Image (cartoon, rainbow, N blue to C red):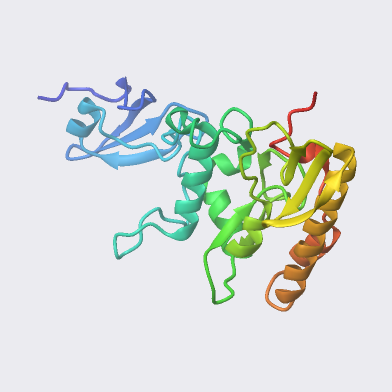
Length: 254
């Protein structure tokens, strides 16, 4: 049974956000969430008592991300998630989901998502304005082609890139503590790229210089292949890209 006067009644929803009854319409009530967004929703009293009212501003994604209010939905009419939501959720999880820290060791505790993109609506708008396809493979979001060494996902620093291009910048584990493509030999250091042996060198710097030059040439080669189907900003970044030892995630400086 309802109290005679339920207006002003306050309790938390199942996410812990306080909600307050501000209007009683007898069959329904209007609830206002007591956070900075003050989102209001019309519902029934039983839902209020059970805490079963969703606040679109609750940080339900790894304690960081929230869906927000806007035109972008998390589920399509066919019951599937739109690509923007799939990618947004994946980015949030690789940066903040504790159970994935071993799967993404170069992300968890190192990379973050800008505050603007904590709100899915903002990310989805950026994604919608920047997404394109080239008729082959998957499209990825990249955070460090434009700004090498960048650790923050943000609209100013991210690009949508074809999978083949993005794979050029994947660092494969090198358990020796040496940079990518570099190995030790009795005469110094060896350099190789994509299984192609590039030579043996006396110093690590000399070996890495040859490796970096080979990789930069490969990046430029592939950039030219895609020139007519990728954004100019991405093409320019690829042509200007420098492979730097200090940005090599495998390298443990001694």
